[in-house]
Amino acid sequence: MYQKIKCSKPTEMKVNDREFHSALQLLIQFLYIIRDMASSDTELNQKNAKILQANIFHHDMCIISQYALKLYDPKKHNASFLHDTIEFTHIMLEMLDEYSKGKVLTIQTQKKRKIKRKQKKTVAKRKPVAEGEIEEFAEELDFSDNEFEEELEDEENIERSFNFVSELSVLVDYDVIQKYTSVLRNVEQYKKHPILLKACTVFFRRIHSQTKQTWIFFQLETLSIFNDFLQKDVTNNSLMKGIQDKVSHTQNDKMVDAYSSEMKAVITMVVQKFTELMKKNKMLGVEILFRFPSREVKDMILNNYDSSRP
Image (cartoon, rainbow, N blue to C red; front, side):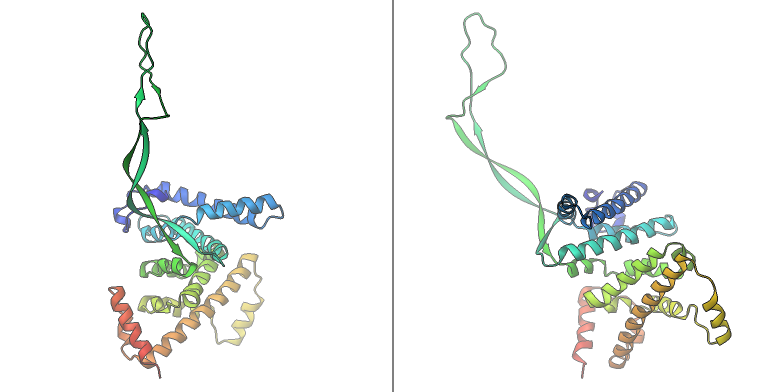
């Protein structure tokens, strides 16, 4: 699956959607197994978990998440495709964050470069044929002399150094955020699967706190969804509030309530940041109607925010 994801746009990739989804589900279970091995009391399991992690994170896992999130189309795919992608991204980032601490890591990218290798060759030396004996096609090589070097052209994957924040930044993308915020709109789905709400909460918090790229949330659609989420289950009627508090909760309900509170805290931080910038840039209310067309434009506008600080 990883080897097939070589292009930058999902429309250019030739990957069977069903096969990809199945491979993604398998990879999720594989990551859970490795995580359980790492937390095992058995020294051998811990050692094997480190070996497996070193192998997995030598590849660009974030490119799989980015590809899957951009590929997902609610008109073509089942919602479980998006749910599994978000769950995979959640567990993968948790493990990568833990694994990368205190390490200088390298990733094998999909970019290739041509290299020249020198290979030693030997001249074939025929075995003398006795009179009346049929000559065989096999040849005996003499390795003691008659050697020469031949240059062969080959390809290898380019490696690059990385840290966790740089890998996480790969997922700071308008389309990716749009897929995540779509989860907040469907209450029934995340009530059935609280892991979805937890994964979205942790992902948004990482973007705000670790990458410092909160600007990605400053879109009218995103802020509107955030506002709707903040207004959920809010009532000014003390009688109704008392009734809601007394309603019996299942374990899932308790988890959803806890993750909802965490999500509201993250959204509040984003809104506060937006309000601060609005005081510096009165045009921000217009800018949220559009996406930054390029990295250069984005950097230029954000630098203006920084330079306008008192």
